[in-house]
Image 1 (cartoon, rainbow, N blue to C red):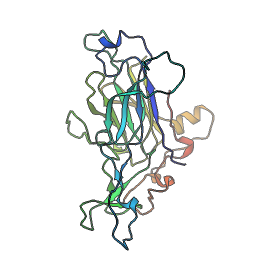
Image 2 (cartoon, one colour):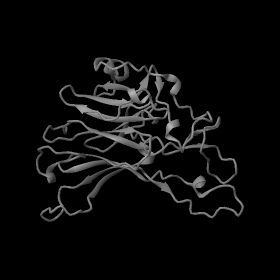
Image 3 (cartoon, one colour):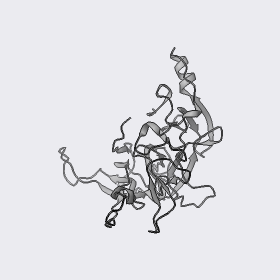
Image 4 (tube, helix red, strand yellow):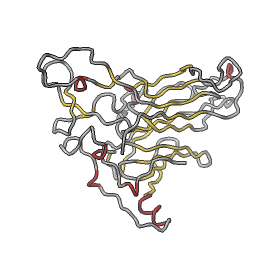
Length: 292
């Protein structure tokens, strides 16, 4: 599997009152986008003869934008298919939500019920790579960037979010995080942490997320296990669907069971940040990305 720079977007295309009167965070014609937050330029010369490369001193930009809301409704002229820069209305940084890919909107409304004010849901991803570090060992005040798993390894800051603005206990993000952006205030909170048998996602992350308005529930795919998880709008998990067994059997295909031995362990040397095949993805036959 090759890692690509990906940009995901969801646009609100529903009938709402005039923009000037709409207090929601996500209005008609706005677009929710996810992207790689980028890295900080080391901006320092390496000592002569140093075995390090510049990449070894390059870290995720915590103030880089991982998700944003853009306005693409008013180019200022009769649209004729030319490209124009969409105005950024709200930015969500790597320090808050980490690296995210999947996007879903619900159908929430403002407290007075006069306007749509959809909440945005963002899912943790390994699509832009997985980065790990070890504690500072050379006294330069920065952690040591690792390319392979190590007993001292931990996730690089900015890989997963920590920015739950509500400050709830246990709100630190991880590979199974679903982040919620409030449709009115724009506040970020940890909506849910996708687990299987009380085990966190090991690092492969989540595939995508979708909202089913008929039942007011969210569905998200887990790339580490191949399961699809169903949540109510409070973040409570309602059910797990095993695509590899139940889905494939229904389609008259051989069942492919979840193999926990494929789980990623960043403390073991067989994990290589430069090799996505070591990221602990579920068997391809049971792996689910997109959801509708």
